[in-house]
Image: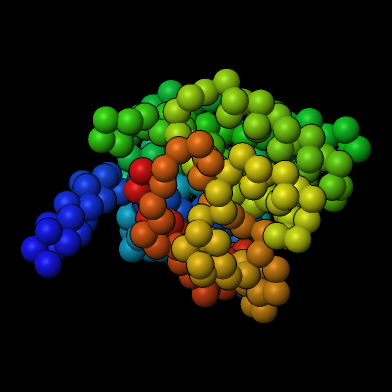
Length: 257
C-alpha cells in the first residue's frame, strides 16, 4: 500500500511541477458588441482578460485605425492596443487586409515585449486574405510557440491551403506549439481531420467540447485551442465563457507540458 501511495505521490509531484500555460482565444468582432450596435465591448473583454489572467491572448477580427472603429469609439483606434492598455499588456497586430481606412487582422496580447512573426496566408479561391501571428515564450525550461490565426469563412479550399501553410511553419520548428483562433470549420469537416493529424484538440482531450458560435445561441464549434501532437500535454482546464460581448464565445485553456 505504501509503495502504491509513494508512486502516486511521485507522479502527482511530477505533474504539478510542470509549468502551467494559460491562454485565451477570442474573436472580438472589432470591439463592437454585435447585439448592441455602436456600443464598444472593450471594457467587458478587458474585464474577462483580467479575470482569467492568461499568459497569451489570441485575438481575431481586430481593427487597427479604421473608420469603422471611429464609428464605435468616436475616433480611430487600434483594438488590440486599447485592450492592452486596459489589461497592462503589450499588443502585437498582424494586418491581413487594408480595410476602412486602416487595417484588419489578428493580434496577440503578451505580458512582456517579445519577438513576433507575421505571415499572410494563401487564398487560392479568392476572398479575404488571412494571416497568422506567432511568438515564442519560455515556460520553465522549454520554449513554446504560440500561434494565432483566423481562417477563411468562405471556402474550404482556402482553409485547407491556410492550414497547410501553418503546418509547414510548424514542421520547421521542434518546439511545442499552441495553435489557437477562429478556424471557421466544424469537427466533422475535412479541415478538422487534417489538422488533428498534427495537433490535439484540447477541448476533446479535456472531454468538454462546447459550441462557440453564435454567442446568442451557439450551435457550432469553430473556435479552438490545438496542441502539437508530438509533445506531451496535460489539459487542466478548457472553458467556454457564456457571454454576448461578441458574436463568438471566448475559449480559455490551462495547459501543462
